[in-house]
Length: 116
Length: 113
Image (cartoon, rainbow over all chains, first blue to last red):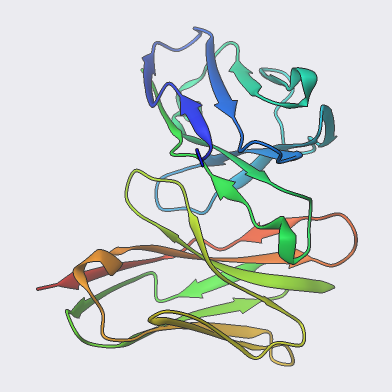
């Protein structure tokens, strides 16, 4: 069974440019998460989807970040315009359900973003 | 404020030795606690999950313990291997129905030959 797929794996852009990340979760997983992980830190939640609904986007910087999960399957996270402080690894995860023992999150390999 | 603190921040051990990683949390109400292993350049992978009523959970050479009274957990690695070199992240889930996951900053383990 394929795991969580993310692309691209690496992205280098200049500040003020737009960038987009794509994630395809494990088939059948209703819950999808986007995290940002800075070097030496744990992941920080940006947004959580249950099917196509964004149920927790309280940590998403909405002035420059946007996300969508059309049809409740794959998802795109966008930054426009990017800032130097956005350099990080962006992780996508999915889980069968939200919470509880069955809510184990399966993570993708991440997209490493460098903003110059 | 709900927090998860891990110690040590980093650890170096020789292959074949045992080690124990610590996780202290202030998350309340508590739902469950997971330990993840994150290899360099990869996403975290779940090792164990424990709910309030569970004191210990094993996964091969990994054994996690939970003391819900003192809000402490540990991850014990037995007979370490080079492939155990990774970051180990403790994640606590809130039990308030918000499904918030609080991540620790991780312990970076290096196993030397």
